[in-house]
Length: 256
Image (cartoon, rainbow, N blue to C red):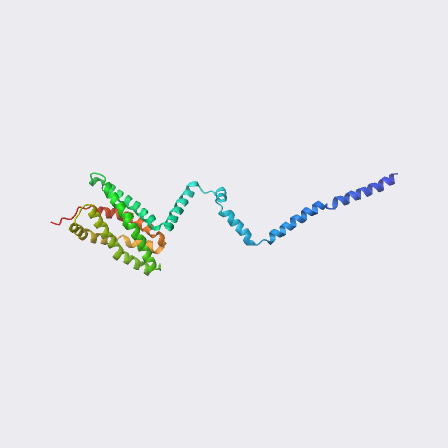
């Protein structure tokens, strides 16, 4: 009896041990499923994985959830992006409005600096400057810079100096002449008085411009893309127009 139980116990223990060591069918199925999927993923090209990552990174919600960019930084980038888009879609209008705003600020600064010498703020003068910037300077800068870029496409030092020379001998005197003439005509001066003002103010203005604009133009032509050159030039012109509006506010020349 004892021998019977010992033999049966040994067989039972051997059977249980065999069942325990033998993997089940489900286990093999799961393992085969994982291996097959691993092979499929390993056969995927690297470009597909890279495209998937690019899609994830290009998703704004994905970036917003994982990046630490503040809302103010995002708004600044959005404003700059909007302005660049407007430069591409409506370049003349955008540059005209930009120039209008800069010249308005320049005239306001000029009147503020000379406030002790003036009885009151001259709003009409500021409006004249705004109109001059929107109608004359903005569009003319757009066509001038595009003309220089197409005529002299290189950006080396020699070509840059050629552009500066053309600006100081052609564009600058022409725009300053138009400015003094329009401003004087808007103040009711006669043609002879306008000519006398040009004789008095134009040459000193051009000479003073030679001490300011060449370095500004060098930076603009050498380092700035052509579609942003009017914006940079207008930024430099802020200081210049403070001086220019002061010159235009001088008393008219007596022709008697």
